[in-house]
Image (spheres, rainbow, N blue to C red):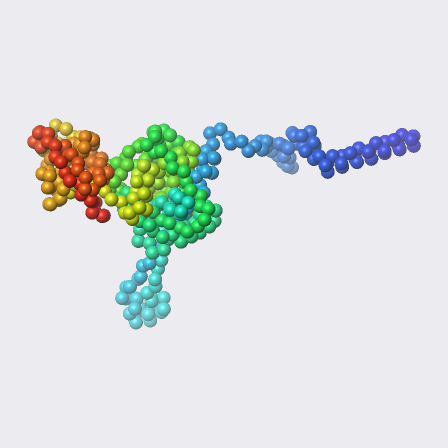
Length: 387
């Protein structure tokens, strides 16, 4: 009996020694042997089953696109000075009751928006309305760094502005091809809505070439149903690969929140505006000196016009390029240099693309007669809202 006990004790001792050695040197052997226990967590009242850990991106996930684009999207805080100079606050009567609190104070209202790092040299693109009137602009990067930005130039007509910061190793975004986008393509909107922090929302391209929204002078918006809210202005709209398609600019809303109709300025416009601002400090556009209007059904009936496509000349600037070429109010413009347009917005975009000091052929209808006029293109005056 004693020999059996000694044999049992020796067996247990050797087994415990082997367990200790394996536990210390090869713990993964035990995990592989008991993989079921890894996925099952027991509590006093429930059994919880966990999925096996995996670094593989799930099917249908846009994690890689978001990861690629998010570092280049920044938060922008613009401060503006405003002085309360109400003379009543300096009146001794008011001071008697309100004390020093009644003295005028300098307030610093601020607005929050987003921006996109476009170049290693620190160029940041945002909306003009985000920084308009600001005397101090602070930029916060996704990696925690902060910097003061200076304004390189603005283009109110497209609501774009170019800033620059002085930091090294900046994460820049990759430009996509907005002209190759299709309705139904998946897009991600990245920005800082309501100041809660960097946020990514997903949607699709709802429409392309929106140009009658009435927000900017020159419009060619990408419409999307990705949730875009206040604070997203100036942020990035990217494709499923994380490439920039546009700058989120505006939303259609009745309550200030997203209703599934957002508008982004396409990268094709962005490149043209940004290059002009960095090179010349401003965007130079063509100018004909006319005010075009869409042809409504009532207008067509009044002028006895059979077509509603094109644009009717509502006014001509005296002494301007169109006036010198013989354009008159009431003329119907239908094409510039052979390129037809459907409405006044398209016409304005075509005029803007003309080079100043060049010549352009304007095709018009006057009393049902088709006329071709050659016009010397001028330079569009800044901040003028109509052609």
